[in-house]
Every structure is written in structure tokens, then in C-alpha cells.
Image 1 (cartoon, rainbow, N blue to C red):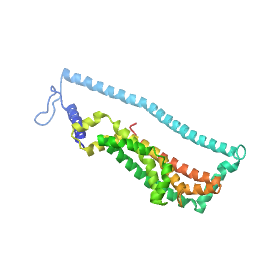
Image 2: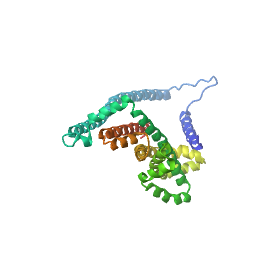
Image 3: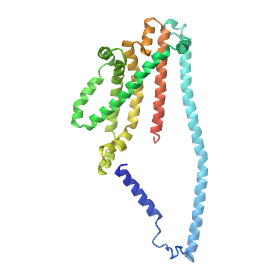
Image 4: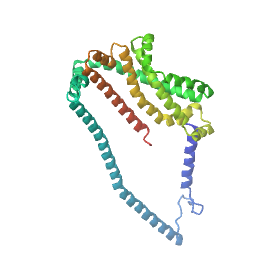
Length: 327
């Protein structure tokens, strides 16, 4: 624990001790350790003070009891809000599927847009026959390794450029130049360099993720309150202590925002790399279905990718609410 944290706790302890200290005019204990009782007008005054304190305590208790209905009302309002929120989301999804089902074969030929029932039937077939699992396993392996490596590299690169001073400013324009490159155009190069295995897919995902995390970390460090950094330096906190107790807590909202964006970009990178060149994966399944003019298969693959993105976005949201409860 850094010294400035211990100093804050020591100051709090001295204030509590001062609050418990007796007043200068109060009688002390006798030789046997007994405190003499007051008599006369002073005792009567103390009695009135005690009764007044009891009355005030009863009034506070009554006020607390009066606040209970408001707390219960707040909890009910919160539950009502969540029901409306999630119910509205489900309703929007159902209406979209209903509109799609109605338009298929009526407004647009079913060959071009398929239908929700046909896509659902294809998903059931993919699950029951086991055809889905090899493709899903490959894509999830690429996704997990790529997003982990890209996030770690983005955090390290952002901290290094911010804290390296003028040297970091030398490299900053080149990072922006690399970020502007279209990653779709880089996919064939990655396949030439690393083959059609996992290495090319992971590299593609890293290039999609690293810049989003980098810019969030970069801006997060620059937005830290200078007074917090000055306090840490004033208490002679080391670089590691400053990172642990000041920088990383301030970076948490920025990093979680970058992670939510990185989930979708990582899936996009995996699918693009698999479409360009692979022998397995959801992108490979979508490409194969497209080559066979199997529109239902294409929508089935897209439905799986969308489901994965929604699940991970939900998990990151739960992590954000847990880590940022103070907000």
C-alpha cells in the first residue's frame, strides 16, 4: 500500500481518537478507576442532555423508518425500468423477425433473403449433425487469442507512448498511419507471410483490435487529473505504485469501452481472414455457402456470429457494471 494511502488512514485514525478524548472540564477517574458522578445543577443539566439525546435518537429512528417506503419505491422503479428495457429489446427483435418473415416471398423473393424459419431450421441441422462445432471452435480460438494479444499490445503501446515523452511523439504519427491502412487489403499479405493457419487469422485480429485499445488508453492517461499524479509524486510513490493506484483505476472506463468495441472488430477480422483463405471457421462456412448460392447458409453463419457478439457484449457490460459500481 503506498505511503499516501497510509497517511490518509493515519489522519482518519487521529480524528477518531480526538473525537473520543474527554473534554478538559470533565472529571477524571479516581484511584480505584471509578469516574465520579456529577451532582446538583450540573447533574440535572446532564439529565436533560441525556433525555434530549434519547429524543433525538428516537426522531432519527422515526425518520429512517419513514425513508423505507421511498427505498422500496426506488427498487420497484428500478425493476420496472429493467422489465421495460429488456421487454422492449425483445419486442424489437420479434418485430424485425416477423417483418422479415412476412417480406420473404411477398415483397422480395425468398431466394435472395431466405426467411427466419428457414435459417432457424438450418441452425438446428448444423447443431444436430455436428457440422457447426468445428467451424465455431476454430473461429473462437482465433477470436480469443487475437483479442487477448491485441488488448495487451494496445495497453502496452499506449502507456509506452504517453510516458516516453518526446520519443513517443516521434512514433505517434506512424501509429496513426498504420491505423489508416485497410486491413482487408492486408489479409492476403498475412496469408502469404503466415499461411492459411491460425497465425494469419490471429495477426489479422490483432491489427483490428490493437489500435482501438491503444487510442482509448492514450486518451485515458491524458485525461487523468494532474492533482492525483502530483499527490502520488508528493508521497514519493514509485512508478509501479502510481500505475496501480492512480493510472489503472482511471483507465478502467476507457479500457472497457475499447474492449466493447474490440469484440465486434475481432469477429470481423476473423471472418474476413477466413473468407480470404482458410479451410475451417464460420467465415469459411459463409464463403462456401455463398459460392453455392445457399443464402440460407449465409444467414445461418451470420446469425451465429451475431449471437457470439451479443454474448460477449453482455459479458463485458456485466464486468463494467461490477468494476464501475461507484458510477
